[in-house]
Each structure stands twice: as C-alpha cells, then as structure tokens.
Length: 217
Image (cartoon, rainbow, N blue to C red):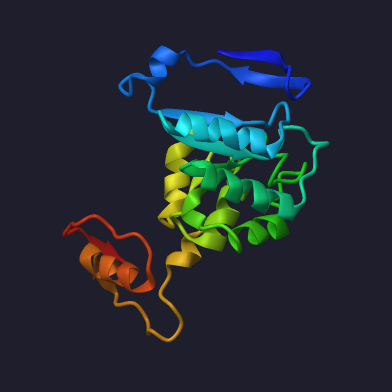
C-alpha cells in the first residue's frame, strides 16, 4: 500500500510504500521489491539506504527518473544514481518513461532521448538496465540499437507478443536485422529451419526452434 507521508528527518514529503516486517522475514511471500522516487523525490543517499535495507531480505529493483515532465536530470546525474543504486544492492535499475512514454528517457513526443541513453550505456552494463518502452517506436529503437535481447519494461499485456515478433525480426521494422550480412552470397531457393538457425547463430541473433519444416524463399 502506498501513502503520502512527511519525513521528519528529511523535512519533505515522500511516497511511502509499506511492507510489513512479517513479510520481509518470509521469502515465500515477497521475493521482489521496487524502490522508486519518481513521484516524490528523495536524496540519493537516503534512497540507497532503503535499497540496502530491503536487499537484506528481498530482491530489489530500483527506478531512476521522474514521472514529472518538469523534472530534468542531467546525464551525469542519471549515471551517478544508477551506479549508486546498483552498488547499494539493486539487482537491476529501471529507467523511467511511464506508461505514456513521454518522460524520463523519452521526450514529450515519445521519441527516445538518444544522447542520454547512449551516455548511460557507456557507463553502466546493459544487462543491469531495464528500459521502459511502452510505445512501438521506442521498442524498435532499442532493438535496432542494442539487439533483440535488450531488457524492456512497462510493456502492456496485449503488446507482449507483438514485441516478441519485433525481437525475432518477424515484422518489417526489424526484419532487416535478420537478413544475411553483406558478402555472404544469395540465399538458396529453399532453406530448412536448421539452415536458418545456423545463419542466426553466425550473426549472433536468437535461434529458431528445432524443426524440419521447409521455407520457400
């Protein structure tokens, strides 16, 4: 349950998500917790202390970025916050964009803030990041930029399968990623799934499931 509270030490309002101590001591009831200051900001050192405390009991995911269009973090502040929260014990850090895809790592017109994202990945391991990308154009950008296995979040349930088709190159937006590289010669007129799988392994993309079905080119 989430409450709006006033922290007497910080002397400022905070968003307080209450987890009863009895649940923290029983790993079968709560396995993951999220620590976020996207709605009401808190000092980074205080947020990291919450992460350290929870990480002793559960797996912690933290979130960086504000849900407000008016709050602007510099790229250096993003990098500092993400690395600090990882060091405090977060398993992964979520980069904020909201369900609208118009704040945080995204612009109000839903475009990705490319310079910001590239600055972050220059200083943080990609496997430790989860990028909120609720819009198709955002998902396409991340897949084209970092490959089909990039971690994406805030995906609507109805968009899970369409996103997977983007990851496997089954839609026009990412199909070109899965075509043979230049100089490898033309494809044979008929290829088995095993042939396609071998080609995908060579260029580093996900493999097709084992099958003897035939595809006509």
